[in-house]
Amino acid sequence: GMATGALAGVPVAGALGDQHAALFGQTAFAKGDVKSTYGTGSFLLLNTGDEPVQSKHGLLSTVAYKIGDAPAVYALEGSIAVTGALVQWLRDRLGIISKASEIETLAATVDDNGGCYFVPAFSGLFAPYWRSDARGVIAGLTGYITKAHIARAVLEASAWQTREVVDAMQADTGIAMTELKVDGGMTANNLLMQILADALDLTVIRPMVAETTCLGAAYAAGLAVGFWDSVDDLKANWHRGAQWEPVVDPSRRAREYRQWKKAVQRTLNWVEGEGADDPSR
Image (cartoon, rainbow, N blue to C red; front, side, top):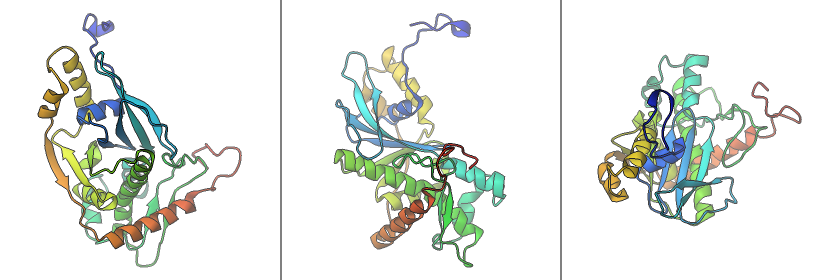
């Protein structure tokens, strides 16, 4: 088709939703490839190949993309409501930091969370729980906890929420993941990326171009008009920027994940009855 208005006459060569564009921009074209975009919330998509997978673990089945006359490629999607928005909340509501980038420096002053877990169910929980009755909880507080421990717990919240979605994806598909491609503004936080690798026990890969949603739209349009000939050309254009390997002791990972899941349980059944979807309650 053709665009109208200010861009009248410009051919429309591709159409992708934002998270699907990010998957495309990460050149996640093989079954089992998975990406996670980190903004105010986070969104994971797992390429499931040419057959849709009906989730039994709280995920959404979606069409990932379709190139020309080739069969459609499907994905499982897991949406997380609050990740980067929690950093903004720490800045704007509590004033613990004055700009978002400061959280990395503050959190790096401690070696762990001191037993503190922050579940940001500000308006309920998305995947894999889908519980509108949940509300946020900071669990494990003692007199030992400092603002640095809370800052680290904020970063860990993104990692543990990602872990729960990854676990659901593996349960639905049986695919044993080895790496996660990441993108979005939060991926500039190197400490978060290491925490993520440790929580997932996966290699975490950040591309040279971290804003892969825009890149994916460009890839799709370029492929459609012949600027690139094939997805192999797109793969050659994609470049790894940095990667992180898990270094935490497995027993510590398992213990902290158990504590996280215990904290999640504390968020449930907070809003009762009618009005459970009202975020002010």
